[in-house]
Length: 113
Image (tube, rainbow, N blue to C red; front, top):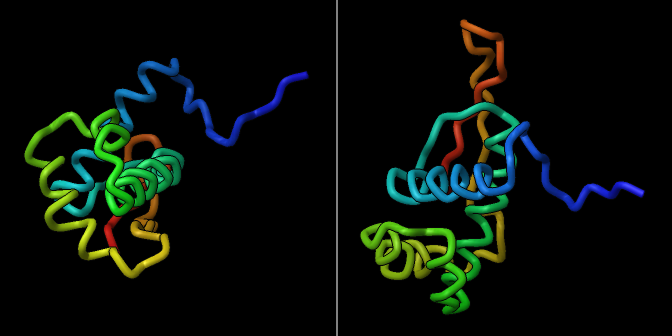
């Protein structure tokens, strides 16, 4: 019996997906916004929320598994974790921007709240 474990595959291998979301989460946490397609945005919000929650709880190793850039790593613990200390969850927001001109894919903007 096939069971989906809560994440969408997005037509790529697991290693490609992990690397892509690591890079996208790094960009989101550095610039505090990123523009991407809607399915990727929905998965990116989950990854970013887990990273910020782990930072709030002081789990340095868990954050380091996803965030490879030292500047972003320090920004998470110095700026973002104290900012969201009182917030229980929902650190990122998805804003739909319409369709991309070339292939009519749904485009979304992911912003930190």
